[in-house]
Image 1 (cartoon, helix red, strand yellow):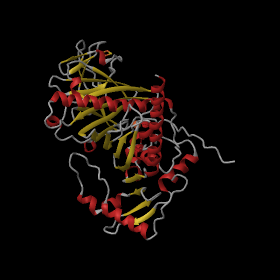
Image 2 (cartoon, helix red, strand yellow):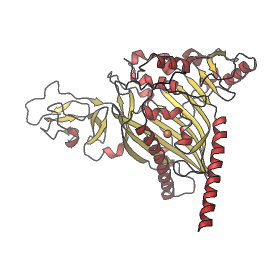
Image 3 (cartoon, chains in turn green, brown):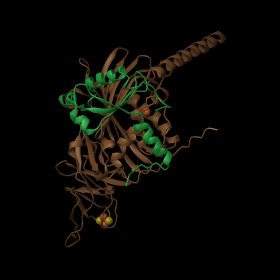
Image 4 (tube, protein in one colour):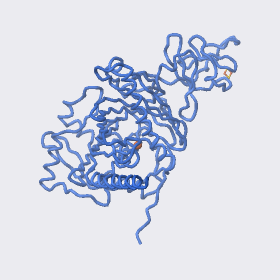
Length: 100
Length: 378
Ligand code: FES
Ligand SMILES: [Fe+2]
């Protein structure tokens, strides 16, 4: 039994729209990771990982723990470069649709 | 005619979140008395045994419902004020002084505890699982030697569900409108039981209060470890004076639309400063961040819950944050991969900052003109 429930079908559609719409699969140029990417503008980036992709990311495995107890891995620079390349090649089209 | 957007207020969660919840600094519970803490729709009793170990039980006696928080500590047990039944830290009844023997079933609910960063945490799960020590928040290195004592505050909040507080993690624009700062850089990462906000911001020069101050720069990294315990590392630059501040932001749900917010501040003692001065700085920052929470509280108290927020391109990933948060309200066996899969989001703050800079410049010009007029009148 889930905890927080939307009461309308439209809300359910919004959940799908905001979390899944227009994600483009990008393969990392340096490892086996494949992630879903969306870019609403040059500066905006959304990256959806899966546990398989995360296990594949060589960079993250190296950076397993950070000092000072902060164990959140900020970002993978290699994936970032791969996303830039996907933008260059036109695989990722930059631009938003009605706020998502 | 375009369709009118309907606010879906959703339904409130039917349970309290699974995970570690912080009850405050552990030291306060070691005075040999039972303490009452409102939590999870009821009341807990917290007490220390003769070894100084702190225990947490349901607050109501299983005999006839006496309020254990009004009892007393006798030996290693808390004694009920009604008929003196003695309850041990493991939840078992240790004795009934007037009875020949203790019923075998005399066992009450005991919450597993852990101490982190001088604070008492308890494990809560409606499914009654064993506590997961793997997902405890981290110990802060050097806390005892290099940092000031905690300045700790407790703020009961009525009329909002604690998920309103969680939304702050992704809410870029409210930092300008509610907290009076410009977020110049804003990123989120969710992964497993953690949700993080990376933010750089500077204070607004046109307003005071909150973080409003032209000479205040913050570099902030804030992570929720589970549903209710956040560590916020802040590099603060105030008038060129740099301070490392750690803010704990945690809460205990107390009812379907109430919770107790707690926050603590410690400051890394700057080299060459005596403890009194360092503590004074910590107090000042506690006031500032405390003021920040009160700004949020005012909004929460007056808003409605919304299950279907309508977002623009400059907003953070509200839906994904809630998807992450949902894992704590789901039976462990039913947690979907997307609730815990890593997710990254970088907000584009360019347009927002352009507009805000212009607005602030206008406000400053207006202020200067008003002051000029007042001078002329005088
Ligand atoms: S109700 Fe607690 S001892 Fe009787
Ligand atoms: Fe806020």
